[in-house]
Amino acid sequence: MIRGLYTGASGMVAQMHKMDAISNNLANVDLTGYKKDTSIHKAFPQMLLQRSDDDGLYNMPFGSMDTSPIVGMLGTGVELNELYTVFEQGALKQSGNPFDLAIEGEGFFSVQTPDGEKYTRNGTFMVDNNGLLVTKEGMPVLGEEGLIYLKKNNFVVDSQGQIFQNADFADDPQRLVSMEENDWANMELVDTLKVVDFNRPRFLKKQGSSMWANTRESGQPRDMELGAETKVIQGFLEGSNVNPVTEMVNMIEVNRAYEANQKVIQTQDTMTSQLINKVMTL
Image (tube, rainbow, N blue to C red; front, side):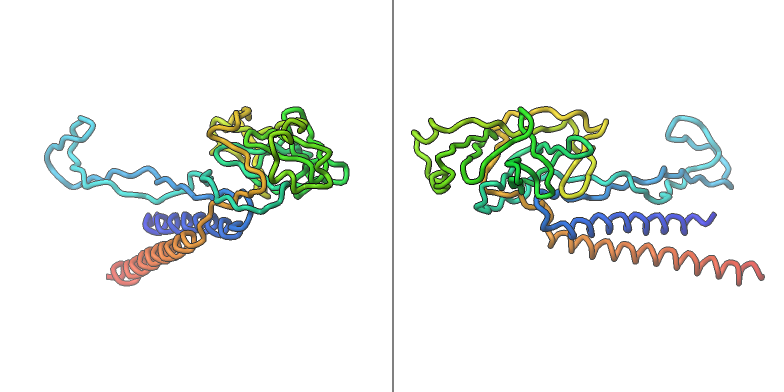
């Protein structure tokens, strides 16, 4: 085996994984609630090189005695360890739409799907023909009591995720913007949004459309107390946490690293060719 070829090839594969992650981040830069991925790599076990033709004793690092002095360590390449999701807070953008909700802090909205309960940071919600609060894909948003039924223009969501409504506001939605203390007294509590978190969110599995599914490694969802470190903000959306300028710089670095590994393989191939065609014919 010509080790240099395999080492260079492993480096090229590693850069391909990085490029896939960067491309996916740039493709979803405008997706509400998207969290960027970064590829994490680890080195193959290093090899300890020793001189074989040498007299005398040498003290090995682990205490034994050997007649082969150490030359040094030789790297043998890298491999993909994991695609790590960075759960940094994205920028909050005001939309003015009362159905748009954002989470400031940690946590996820709970959504009922045909495949079970899933989780999202994308708060682009709406009300369907049955008065059910749903995502833009039509999946019901869950509250602590189950499904959430609302009427348009007559509800408000506070920082603790509590949903209040007043039938008198249906014809005057502007009153929700400047509610007085007496208005709050007449508000009816509908439900509280089910916002959950996980012990190890890094192991959540992406499902597309800013959806995640829990895994055995992430643990089961646990309800969060809202209003302190984590808040729900009505009329705002959380943008993706992808910085397109940074991702473009990373893409350039990946391309250069890929080309460098190509040069390693080309050089190794040239040296091998000379060895076979010139040295072996002597």
